[in-house]
Image 1 (cartoon, rainbow, N blue to C red):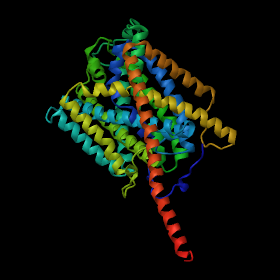
Image 2: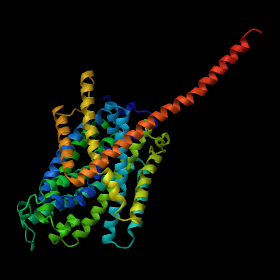
Image 3: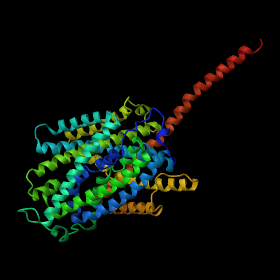
Image 4: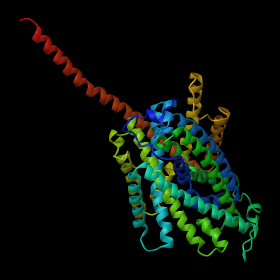
Length: 481
């Protein structure tokens, strides 16, 4: 790992005006979205209150991954982040495969978040059709991403602030409900948690684990955004410290409240936050939290579009994607990279609206467990690059504590997650689909690299032949007759 200071960055690269507070809140914004406001209910339905075990396992894993990414991002802030680190540690094919895999995951999620936000908004404001709302969201957030990273960062900051404030208020109401201090409302106590903690056994916990891991997916976007901060070395360290514990508090705290208030068989788990507030008999609160959920989804859409565009920009710079995708606007935004990333989202959104419940589920089957592969690549890369840096005596601005034991523990934990995943039929199919997708991407990357090398060699030959002809011609002209 080599350090790359802000002063060393050449002109013509991405801007570097994102502030530390924006980077921190962006990490929250990308992770607190559909996975918490909607997916938490699905997790409880699958595992009952035992879903808390799934959150603890996934939470431990994401902490270790973020520590590893933080070390690498502070030493080498790059918009390609874990894709670049995988390339440095394991070669170009590995780096390109991880980058394209993550990009594909994000563009699918972008479409899902646009549709989810539109559906929620329509449920409380049935005026504009869902398809029109979804396409409007896509257009608006494309424009925001084209406006420059400083404006984008500020927009995401206030979006995330609203979500955090709503969750804090939700936790306060939930605690008051469970403690029985709300007037005229009987407390459910902890009976829902203690009476049937794991109704579906280990299989339910395994199923819920993949729902939870998908919910945590997106936190790694902090390492991507580090390349556009004013002081990456300090900003990354601050963001890693705060994002991790806040997410765990918000996720585990919120899920505990939901599991305690709503039984695993409750239909209210379709919109779990609204269900808890309805149980608390807070007038208008259910509508309010639904609107907050809309904001949460749009915030995550915003952050994921940013992450997808920066990843494909980085791939383009490394000649793993068409070179035109690395062109920048006057605001130092990769315009075409944003356009390509959002185009897939537009297509998926339109197809899902034409064929409801058929397109996105199929896409999610492919990319549902891709974040596990990304996290695994980050841990392996950090293990290799840290050993390399220590061997060469390279100073690192941020060092992961407990190395290498904690990195190895993270890989062991990840291996156990895969093992548990293969034990359940639903997650087994998802893992196999993801493995096949990875194999396809890796093969395409290898073929593309060889084709590019062959084309470069072929295009160089005519120039060499012309030079030889010119040389022969000059020699002939100088030769005596």
